[in-house]
Each structure stands twice: as C-alpha cells, then as structure tokens.
Image 1: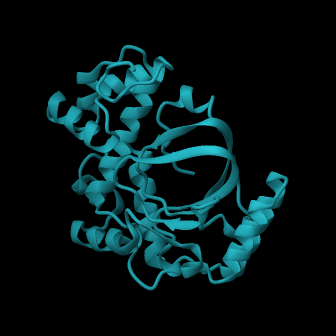
Image 2: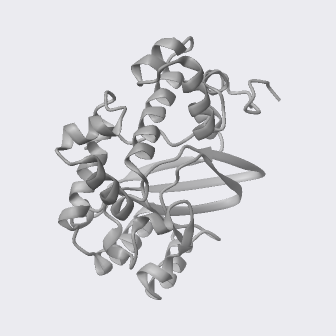
Image 3: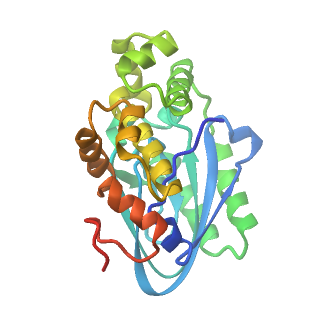
Amino acid sequence: MHRIPRGIVDEQVARTKFTLVRHPPAAELRELVEYYWLLRWDLTEPHVQRVLPNLSVHVTFFPGTTAVHGPMRDVFTYRLEGRVHGIAARWRPGCFRPFLNAPVRTVAGRSVDVTEIFGANAADVATRIRNARTDEEMITAIDNLLMACRRPVTTAGRAAAEAVETIAADAGITRVTHLAAATGVSVRALQRLFAEHVGSTPKQAIRIYRLDEAARVLAAEPAPDYAGLATRLGYSDQPHFIRDFRAVTGRSPGAFSRSAHDPMPDNGNGRRE
C-alpha cells in the first residue's frame, strides 16, 4: 500500500485533545476504501484542529458533519467541542468517481450531504453511529452501508489510483513530466484522468505529496536542513519552497517544525501564544 499522508498538524497537542484510531474496512471494500478513522473527544474547552490537504474523498459520520467531503487542496480546520464520537471512510484517491454523476473535480474543496450520494438509508446509518456504544458497532454500520452501495472501480479509475500511488511512492517525482515517464501516460491524458477521477491536476497532486514529505521531515528532525530539503523535493531555491509550504499548510517550515517539537501553541508566524 502506498504511503498515507500525515494529515494531523501539531500532533503533540492533538494527542491531548482526541483519540484517533484507524481500522480496515471489510475485505470487499478494500479496493475502494483505504481505511476507516474513528475519532473521539471529550473537551471542556473547544479545540480547533488543523489538517493538511490530501487527495482522498472522506465520507464522515459525526454530529453536524454527516457528509461527503471532496479532496482538499489546502489546509483546513475543524472545531472540536463537547463529547463526541464518530467514524469516517477515507477513499483511495481515484476510486470515488463511480459514486458521482460528475467528475470528482466538481466536489473538490467542498462537502455534500451524505444522503445525496448514498441515499436516504445513510441517515439511518448516521443515527446508528451516533447511538453506538462501541467502535465495532460503528464499523459494522458503515461497512454495511458501503457494501450495499458498492460499485466497481473502472479501468480509468484504477489507472488514476495507480498514478497517485506512483507519486506517493517516489519522492523523486517532482514534475508532471516525471509522472508521465513513470506511468507511460502522456501529460495531457494525465490531466484529463486526474480531473475526472482524482479532483486535482497532476501538478497539484505532486505538490501535495512533496509538501507532505516535507512535513514528515520537519516533524521528525528538530534541526532540519531547509535548503537541502528544498533541493531534494525539486525546488529551485529555498524561498520558493518556503512560499509553497506556507501556501499549503498555513505556516512557514520553521514554524511547522517548532510546533512539532514544542507542544506550546504556535500562531503560525513562529511566535508562541
């Protein structure tokens, strides 16, 4: 399986605010769904969690957010408050197109009610999940819904998924021409394939994955080599890397690194609150 993007920003703080568990879907769904993520929190004060962009469609069952969320190209935030539990399915990039009546690009960066895609039965599933006492009850409810609605991945969808996996597996792919050479698919054909089945351009997909790799390095190394990292990820200079990283994550690489190694809140400009 290809590398899963990091997702959570400020992991040290996040661990004190909620519990996140991943669980595989039913075997019949594994070509479509990467995993389920189960989230629980019990907070006396609200917490705003920032999440890095990714190319997956997420089908979520949480109070107030029972929805299908399209691929996100920029960092987004989620407000956690009260006592809540829920579950979501993270789709393999490229594999959600059969559930839509339009290209995946039409839901990129936005959300639609889950009943629009999965029918009225999804509302009953949301109620069962809301009333569930165990993780197993939530998993069974979402498994049953998705298996009842399951549709096969098309040949084009599988090609799109494999192209995304190629980007994820090879950090040396920093340009669309590199991806075209690696997959044997022309640049123009990749652009059409990604618009229809992934919801982004190939260039945007490469940018998301290489900046995700940067986030991994910054979180793992207390004193990262910023210039070396920029070069390794295909940037012509460090300032270009910094601008790109800030545009996607909302923070400079330095602020992101400090927040990963210091659990005190960071306002995004490198200053502690």
